[in-house]
Amino acid sequence: MWHSGLIRATLKSQTYSTTLQGDGNLVTHSTTYDKAQRMWSTQVEWSSASESLHHGEYTLLLTPNADGLMIIRRVDSEIIWSTVPVELEASPTAYPTNQPFQTVRPTRPPVDYPTPNPTMYPTRTPTLTPTDYPTMAPSPRPTMFPWPDTVPQSQVYSLESGPLVGHTTHDSCKFWVFLGRPVPMQLVYWPHDDSGSGTDYLASSQTVFLYPDAESNGAAIETILGLQPDTLYLYEVRVSNEWLSQGHFKTAPAPKQATSFKYLLASCMNVKSNDGGYRNQPVWNEALDKDIDFAMLPGDTVYLNNNDWTPEGEMIYDRIWYRNMQQRAEVHFARLIKTVPTYGSWDDHDYGKNNAEHRQKGKKNSLEAWAHLWPNPYQGSPKGTGNYYSYSWGDVDFFVLDCRWYRNSYNGTLFGDPQLEWLEEELIASTATFKIIVSASDVMEKSMTRDVKDIGKIVSRNSISGVLFNSGDIHRNEYKVQDLENWPYRVHQLTSSGIARVWRRNFAIINVNTGLNDPEVKAEFYAADSRERLTTWSNDPNLECGFSPENENRQSKCTQRIRLSELTP
Image 1 (tube, rainbow, N blue to C red):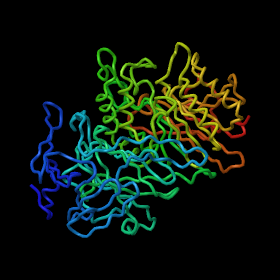
Image 2 (tube, rainbow, N blue to C red):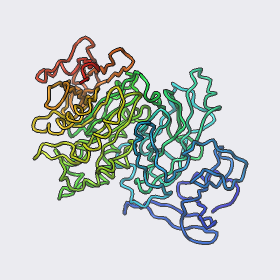
Image 3 (cartoon, one colour):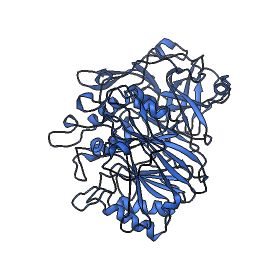
Image 4 (cartoon, rainbow, N blue to C red):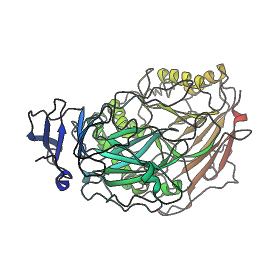
């Protein structure tokens, strides 16, 4: 069952795991999945002294070269014992700790609420078997980069979902990976060398371990630190030094400095073709071809239906997980999320029932599922619960709001007092050129403008420049500008919705340039050229949007510039 030498064939097994306990004893146990009961079970097969299954302090792993075994103390990455000499080149966060990760923003470091401490073996009953949703067979490595040819592809394991590149700063990146089995993985990453020699990998690769987390339904969520600003990194997800998936990402530019970048703004993704959606979504490739730096997906990232809540209307965690697995299995979307940092927020269809508000039953299940599915910076604040957060890209701050948790159509509020108190502190502390507020719902929606007017009071009281809005929900592209009560300048909103929900399959590329004499945000709206499933998408760079909601054809492919001088008190 176990010995101190290396029998690679048995170490690859999906059934057995050996762990060093905190009391110094070794335990080997089997892990099996009962399809009829839809649950995992474990059984002790061998123990050096006791039958306690596992202790979180130590872990027995293959060495990086797969030529021996090593025992790692997880809290500080120290090698306690190994069968062969070995040195790890790991980042400071190679092993999870209890310390929260904080992004760098000198004037007000935001709190980044950490994910729960990982454990090695899931205690939550897994939500699905791999055949419950479409998955892809492992594909050959992409040829655009020189990958290490000494590392073989795994013939035993394959990812059920991911990787998903999440919150990224100038020196860090947060990853989400779901293997679907209680097996530790490795994330090997290195800066890309344009020479194409492959020496970048040999000279500078680092490794962090990805531990399936019982508290996150078996997903592995990890942040790597020590990266360089504005740098392209390649990475591989591996098990036992055999690769499962590859991708790349680019870090954000240095903070608080003038910069130019572009991001994807898109919402409303429905992978259910029998429910008005698109099972095949090549539109994501169109967006990727625009050389975007990151993606912002404001709401309706999946479409829940009657199967996803109880007869009493309470949201079901497992069904929310399932819908996200469906969307992430779509091949073009899967390519997007593993190659550019992707941020998400919710609207009604991925939060609860249609037009759901603050009284949605089981909304805590929705919030928990999102925490386990999306590697956003953090979730909520000490001011109040909710699915909201902030992040920065260069000298631009983004404030992603939750328009459902506190929403109350009776009194016309979208965000609620706790969230607005948080936003006020964030806006006052921000020194960014642009402050982009993201709301999945239109902040200027009739009868729901109370909160945007209150935000106007904050902006006026504190003479805050550069505030504008991004939105989704309405199944079309739209530029909206209005004079609103309490605001010292006109309120501008850029909306893109329906990327996998309506025939136009709209998206927007938002270009930000703060290095100009008059810094600007330019929106390029794209829409499909025909109703065919396989079509082309286009934008008219010479067609200014204006505000003409009655003319959807004009809005769908127009281009609009918003300059800082228009957003100054």
